[in-house]
Image (tube, rainbow, N blue to C red):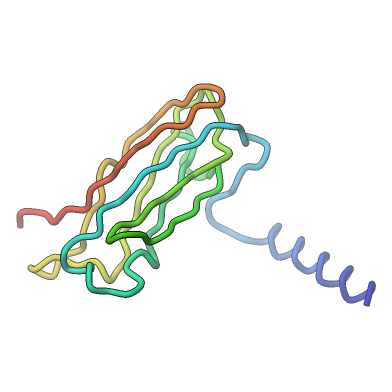
Length: 138
Protein backbone atom coordinates (compact mmCIF):
# COMPACT_ATOMS: atom_id res chain seq x y z
CA UNK A 1 0.00 0.00 0.00
CA UNK A 2 2.82 2.36 0.90
CA UNK A 3 4.51 1.75 -2.47
CA UNK A 4 1.30 2.67 -4.27
CA UNK A 5 0.98 5.92 -2.31
CA UNK A 6 4.59 6.83 -3.04
CA UNK A 7 4.12 6.06 -6.74
CA UNK A 8 0.98 8.20 -6.89
CA UNK A 9 2.72 11.09 -5.11
CA UNK A 10 5.70 10.94 -7.49
CA UNK A 11 3.42 10.79 -10.54
CA UNK A 12 1.38 13.76 -9.30
CA UNK A 13 4.53 15.79 -8.66
CA UNK A 14 5.85 14.97 -12.10
CA UNK A 15 2.55 15.87 -13.80
CA UNK A 16 2.40 19.18 -11.96
CA UNK A 17 5.99 20.02 -12.85
CA UNK A 18 5.40 19.24 -16.53
CA UNK A 19 2.13 21.14 -16.90
CA UNK A 20 2.14 24.05 -19.32
CA UNK A 21 0.15 27.27 -19.21
CA UNK A 22 -0.17 29.80 -16.42
CA UNK A 23 1.74 29.05 -13.26
CA UNK A 24 0.06 29.09 -9.87
CA UNK A 25 2.41 30.76 -7.44
CA UNK A 26 2.30 29.40 -3.91
CA UNK A 27 5.27 31.54 -2.87
CA UNK A 28 3.23 34.71 -3.47
CA UNK A 29 0.31 33.57 -1.34
CA UNK A 30 -1.12 35.88 1.23
CA UNK A 31 -4.02 36.50 3.52
CA UNK A 32 -6.25 38.85 1.50
CA UNK A 33 -9.57 37.79 -0.02
CA UNK A 34 -11.66 38.99 -2.95
CA UNK A 35 -15.29 37.92 -3.08
CA UNK A 36 -18.57 38.80 -4.74
CA UNK A 37 -21.34 37.69 -7.04
CA UNK A 38 -21.84 37.46 -10.78
CA UNK A 39 -25.45 37.88 -11.86
CA UNK A 40 -26.45 35.10 -14.23
CA UNK A 41 -27.81 36.55 -17.51
CA UNK A 42 -31.47 35.92 -18.31
CA UNK A 43 -30.55 33.52 -21.12
CA UNK A 44 -28.88 31.16 -18.60
CA UNK A 45 -31.13 31.54 -15.55
CA UNK A 46 -33.14 28.39 -16.30
CA UNK A 47 -30.03 26.21 -16.42
CA UNK A 48 -29.54 23.87 -13.46
CA UNK A 49 -25.75 24.34 -13.48
CA UNK A 50 -25.49 27.89 -14.80
CA UNK A 51 -22.25 28.59 -12.91
CA UNK A 52 -20.39 25.56 -14.23
CA UNK A 53 -17.60 26.76 -16.46
CA UNK A 54 -17.45 30.27 -14.99
CA UNK A 55 -13.74 30.96 -14.77
CA UNK A 56 -12.47 33.49 -12.26
CA UNK A 57 -8.76 33.88 -11.59
CA UNK A 58 -6.41 36.44 -10.12
CA UNK A 59 -2.96 37.03 -11.55
CA UNK A 60 -0.15 39.45 -10.91
CA UNK A 61 -0.75 42.59 -12.97
CA UNK A 62 2.95 42.69 -13.90
CA UNK A 63 2.88 39.10 -15.23
CA UNK A 64 -0.54 37.64 -16.05
CA UNK A 65 0.99 34.16 -16.38
CA UNK A 66 1.48 33.99 -12.60
CA UNK A 67 -1.85 33.08 -11.02
CA UNK A 68 -2.34 33.72 -7.31
CA UNK A 69 -4.95 32.69 -4.77
CA UNK A 70 -7.50 29.89 -4.64
CA UNK A 71 -10.82 30.51 -6.40
CA UNK A 72 -14.15 28.87 -5.55
CA UNK A 73 -17.41 29.46 -7.46
CA UNK A 74 -20.83 28.39 -6.19
CA UNK A 75 -24.35 28.79 -7.53
CA UNK A 76 -26.92 30.32 -5.21
CA UNK A 77 -30.25 32.10 -5.73
CA UNK A 78 -29.91 32.76 -9.44
CA UNK A 79 -26.37 34.05 -9.28
CA UNK A 80 -22.81 32.79 -9.00
CA UNK A 81 -20.89 33.67 -5.85
CA UNK A 82 -17.11 33.55 -5.94
CA UNK A 83 -14.28 33.81 -3.45
CA UNK A 84 -10.57 34.06 -4.18
CA UNK A 85 -8.58 33.58 -0.99
CA UNK A 86 -4.87 33.51 -0.26
CA UNK A 87 -4.16 36.65 -2.29
CA UNK A 88 -0.96 38.63 -1.72
CA UNK A 89 -1.34 42.08 -0.22
CA UNK A 90 0.27 45.26 -1.49
CA UNK A 91 0.51 44.08 -5.11
CA UNK A 92 -1.55 44.99 -8.16
CA UNK A 93 -3.65 41.99 -9.13
CA UNK A 94 -5.55 41.45 -12.38
CA UNK A 95 -8.97 39.86 -12.07
CA UNK A 96 -9.79 37.68 -15.10
CA UNK A 97 -13.34 36.46 -15.66
CA UNK A 98 -14.38 34.08 -18.42
CA UNK A 99 -18.10 33.48 -18.92
CA UNK A 100 -19.20 29.89 -19.62
CA UNK A 101 -19.92 28.96 -23.23
CA UNK A 102 -23.54 28.31 -22.23
CA UNK A 103 -24.04 32.03 -21.51
CA UNK A 104 -25.07 33.50 -24.86
CA UNK A 105 -26.83 36.68 -25.92
CA UNK A 106 -30.04 36.87 -27.93
CA UNK A 107 -27.97 37.68 -31.05
CA UNK A 108 -25.82 34.57 -30.46
CA UNK A 109 -22.69 36.41 -29.28
CA UNK A 110 -20.79 35.46 -26.12
CA UNK A 111 -21.66 37.18 -22.84
CA UNK A 112 -18.89 39.34 -21.35
CA UNK A 113 -18.36 39.84 -17.63
CA UNK A 114 -17.13 43.18 -16.29
CA UNK A 115 -15.05 44.54 -14.75
CA UNK A 116 -11.87 42.73 -15.76
CA UNK A 117 -9.61 45.19 -13.99
CA UNK A 118 -6.88 45.45 -11.37
CA UNK A 119 -7.17 45.59 -7.61
CA UNK A 120 -4.68 46.15 -4.80
CA UNK A 121 -5.55 44.63 -1.42
CA UNK A 122 -4.19 45.46 2.02
CA UNK A 123 -2.95 42.94 4.56
CA UNK A 124 -5.83 40.78 5.89
CA UNK A 125 -8.34 42.69 3.70
CA UNK A 126 -11.54 41.15 2.37
CA UNK A 127 -13.03 43.17 -0.47
CA UNK A 128 -16.38 42.69 -2.18
CA UNK A 129 -16.33 43.07 -5.97
CA UNK A 130 -19.64 42.29 -7.68
CA UNK A 131 -19.48 41.64 -11.41
CA UNK A 132 -22.09 41.99 -14.12
CA UNK A 133 -22.69 39.92 -17.22
CA UNK A 134 -23.65 41.87 -20.32
CA UNK A 135 -24.24 41.51 -24.03
CA UNK A 136 -22.57 43.77 -26.56
CA UNK A 137 -24.76 46.16 -28.52
CA UNK A 138 -23.80 44.67 -31.90
